[in-house]
Image (cartoon, rainbow, N blue to C red; front, side):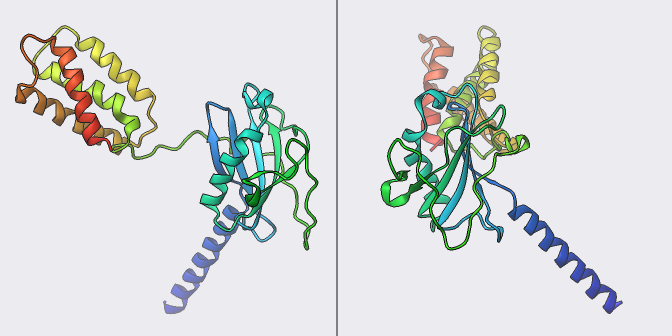
Length: 247
């Protein structure tokens, strides 16, 4: 039985190693912007490491991206900040830009350097690939399946959840006071606000609970005068609560 247990442990260790090797060979998405229609990927070298002094980077640009007409030079310093944050040893990068629709390369590959604030080696001109002691394969087009939607995050203490918090708080206040007028409109605002959030289910539940508790405190505090429109008053008080709780 002891021998069989050791064999199982060895097989498990081998399987984990194979998983790590497979994952290491995959491109790593460093940045993306739905507004600009762009995704930035880093590629591993022959050893499976993507984070190194000279990064291999592919930039995937959607066909309706404003960067196709404006160029990406203005974005390179911003991309460089991401390179430095996610890979502190990075001192430069070889970059290739591709269209998302057909994976055709736009222009020539070029280099950027941290010492030049992540600008092109020769501003506005394609730069030749650097001569390295060991050949480094150039970046390749990103496969279509690598384009993935943003992953949900915990947003219960982020300002981006403020609109949802205010809408939910206002709705709960109307429900507590049994205010028939305005409830449907408040529900619609809450539903629309939730669409703009990429939050985990647990985080959304926490924001909803916080909004409900804030609404109860507001209603019981008497902060809304009988002379005020109740819905407007709730929105004002809920906005204050959002500022205090979503930091």
